[in-house]
Length: 86
Image (cartoon, rainbow, N blue to C red; front, side, top):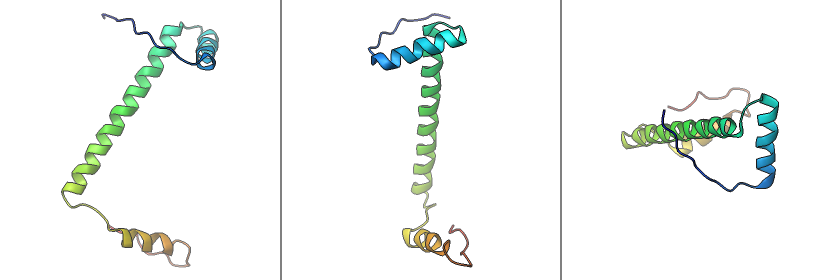
């Protein structure tokens, strides 16, 4: 696999944590940074996927109005909560 060197300035405390983790795991700094970057990118891609899915729901009218949600939330304090609005 081809690679590319990326350079980033990070706060010293963060760099120290990376070094400590690399030492504890007996891995290189590069390996730690690659794992962290991969996890963050995966998280951001999932966030984007979920946002687009939610926007598609809104576009198709698959929403619950605020008053229904508020009534449901208010009922949770009572003895007989109402069912979740759909």
